[in-house]
Amino acid sequence: MPSVTLRAIGPDSKEETLTEYICDWPDCPNVAEHVIGVIVELRAYSAVCKKHAAMIASGRSRPGR
Ligand SMILES: [Zn+2]
Image (tube, rainbow, N blue to C red; front, side, top):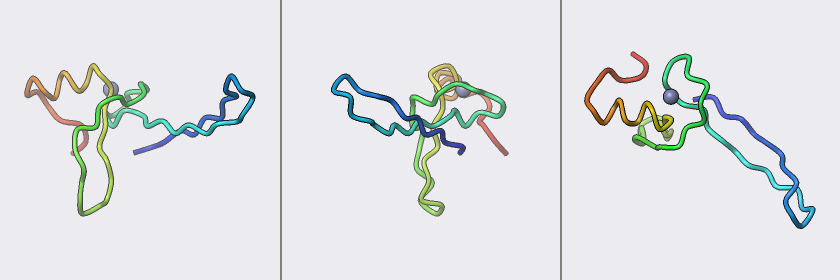
């Protein structure tokens, strides 16, 4: 899963580092908001955006493979 690290200046002028994950769905550029599972063997999260979380929940095709 690709990740994007953003640097943002908070209201107190402190620099914060935020890490956001991009949706695991192929070619989906949205920020992932829903963790759909943890792949224990890889010690990795799988996460998708809202739209694709809804698609997965409705039993349609899964990302990857
Ligand atoms: Zn998505």
